Image (tube, rainbow, N blue to C red; front, top):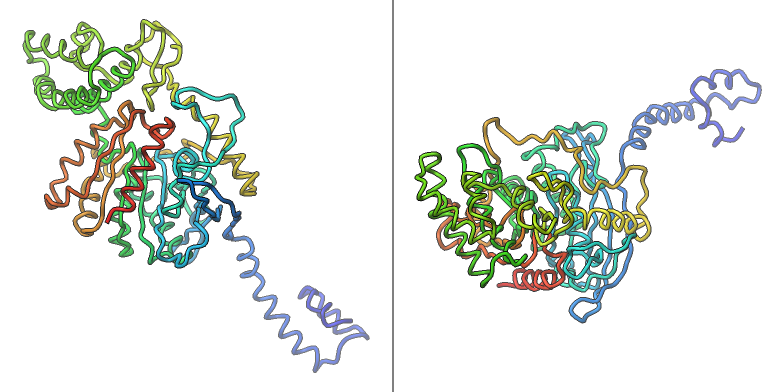
Length: 515
């Protein structure tokens, strides 16, 4: 019998081997038995290691032309497994990163971590809609669908020429999953989400030797909550100071969006966006930017004062306010009188083009599609979401499987409810990340913030960020100069509108190259 054959025997076969006339001399066998025993004792650990999730990674090299220059890059689809303190597997987070090739000192090149919101959204929208070297084609203005199936094309408006990109899918979105030693509740919550995404950023930065790189965050929608929390968390937990945070169609205080009886803030917040939308659809005329600013001044001045009076408002004042609201929205003053001067965005989306038999989009109120039920007073669906969902889902799955060669039996979750229930924090409290953002800005004097907002966004209307940022009393007055605000013609995902995509790149280039 060969020595190599012996190590394949089970421990139960060895006694029979000793009795065999073909057995090895005992002096030769005992050392082998000792070695075999050690091998066998090690087997459970080896088996466990084999069963544990391993980092999965696929790469490709490609090029894209940006600003007239050919940019060679490496794309990497991978998972990083988050660990417990005793090295058990908690969750695997999927990401796609893009690194420009041919850099003399990669450690000094800027890197941007980008994510969407939800909570429950993957990073597909920013990834294939705006920032990455590949993009999903849409109609020129982004309000209509193109014939399916969709597939990606080169994105000449990417910012990969200036900064490396990492698109993060938080746990339970995209291909990210809770692992066997983790629990969903450890990731599905405001604080839990910040901690897990922060852990991923730390790990990615370490494993890719990027601690010396300038670092940026870009969060869209609920991603603004995440980015604000991360800016403070990364500094406090790891000493990772950021260079910049981009808040795209974001929010940091949910009170600005959640109406409740006796709290009328949301009515003031939504009015300027309704004005921008009414102007787009020709219901009011004049200089749009001036009208929106006038509506905002009215919303937080006379309108807010009138709302505070509740039922005690006089008929004279109520009629005057209703008439003014009509001039800012194109809706009849009688409707505002009927609704006690308070109209929800959902009702507005149904009313503005009621006579035309159309309903407006929530994410982008420029989008107007046929109404479902004319007898209802509310929108019923969001045509602006219908524009993008099928196209982005198909294009992302095709790109991951055909180009990046990613294989797996789990579906890629574009937008999922699997993150529910979401832990919003202490009971009887509304999520507000203002203190975290101002803490990050106060403790890091070099941190800059860029706020991007669309005129026709009825999901996170721009006035919410204007209100929240104006209430950051915890930073020195001079630090307010580090906060920039820029506007776009379209809505929540304004980058689907080609002129806005071009402007977005220009704004990011200016932000990233500022000294």
